[in-house]
Image (tube, rainbow, N blue to C red; front, top):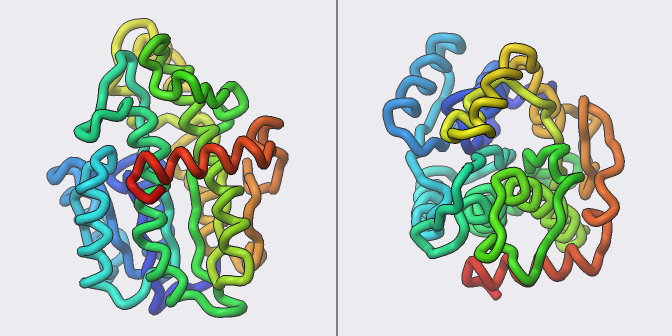
Length: 286
């Protein structure tokens, strides 16, 4: 990785799993960190573990529920007051819910957290990212998506699963939303010193799906011991966040450290633009 001394990186979902390992890797490269997590206790624990592993690390823990648009705006405003630069934004926070729930904004929670959370936080921090980047050293946005997007379909007639809800269906649709958003944003960033890419981290043994029950939770528990480690899952995130060979690369989808094709629907520019418009409307930026 490129040495990151003097740079600031923000990682959401940073208290465990891929998010924690990504934050730890960035700290080891010398970056100052903004750690974002929903649970205050886990956030304190993650901060302590990083400080123990990287003496002298600069760590700014920030508690926020990223399914809440008000909390995202509060978080972004606080970061803008506390930091004069932001070089890397890793959108990593996400979850899967076995039953349909709604966020405080009245939006189906998977779509609210896993997709709209990425959209709103990115747009709220975009000016800070743009002023931090420069030609040859662009600021970087890293969207942690999933290969599950290949199973996804944007159902514009029932995007929140009000008529038909399934946990895997909702998750796959949200991860497809991540990739569509990445491509639409990359077009809008052309010529600016900010890049954006999406990735599949692999199928990882982490805290993912532990909040679910029923057959989904049971099945995930059975396969968890055979999955890759969070350290392995963080490698592609770290590559996109800091590798010198990725400088200037934007609007791509990566898996196992390689630029690979995403699903046909994700590459449909009309769908990208329609999801872009819908997402902005849903976060009050339409």
